[in-house]
Image 1 (cartoon, one colour):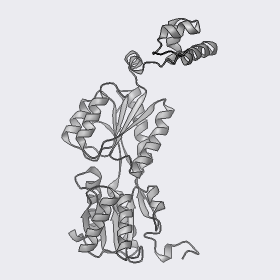
Image 2 (cartoon, rainbow, N blue to C red; image 1 turned 180 degrees about the horizontal axis):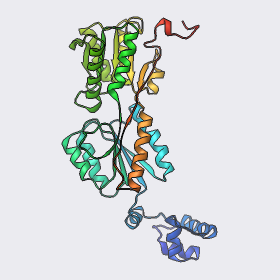
Image 3 (cartoon, rainbow, N blue to C red; image 1 turned 30 degrees about the vertical axis):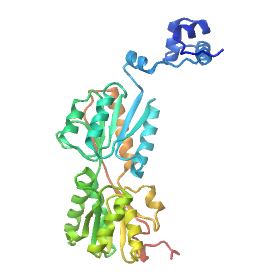
Image 4 (cartoon, rainbow, N blue to C red; image 1 turned 120 degrees about the vertical axis):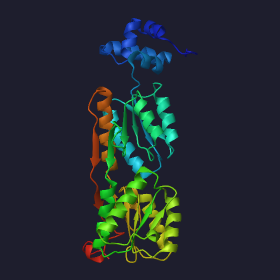
Length: 344
């Protein structure tokens, strides 16, 4: 007859015919013979016994969980990160818990406060905005933290970041090689870490190549999303006539593709388009989207490895890793001369 309430270790021990200590050892992953393990697990299954994770955490000081906090779990770049992190933490016998915190630093502070109560063994944090309060919370945390993104130089925390400035420079250089001169930027909010980095990289690159940096060629979307990108690109086309557009991420660039098409502009004949992040959305777009690969999976993998290292060795030296970007050229910017043989 099924138990109507949670069975305890003593009941499992009695059913299996072993000691309570043996049951505890098996269920907590300790060493035991195959026969003992089989008897204990069969008894636990028959009684519907579920080990108390919170009690185990108190005994061992471990939760076997790693948290990943990102702004938007629907963004393809974060999906790439989650896949990469999952593979690394699983190999280290951790479970991954994902939180979508939006762009508000207070939400990340609240999450960090919660996790510090013993709900995770470490945190991978990818913040859009870095504020003094968030920095203070990270510094005060007992929880090991690795940041995926840029940090002020005086913040002694492990972090892995993209080189956005170099990445957008690759995009501008490529477009200049195609003969483009009026290169516009559809950016996300400039008070975010990626928005500020993209703008700085754009301004540096257009200056380096002697291109106009007119305010009419720069628009700022309300968010790094497709819908916000459509609205921002519509504003851009009302105030200027670019011959190329760089989107600060792939969602903004795909939005630019759609808005240009709606306006009757041919891509890339009339206007070339380049995105950033080189996500699956770039290959799925029509035409396929040239995009700067900022190494999202590589960044996430490196960050996960740093976090596991930090958990196992809290006194290890702080590391800062920068991932080198590359450019994937596709149909949205490729000239006739660059098209594969036989392509129309």
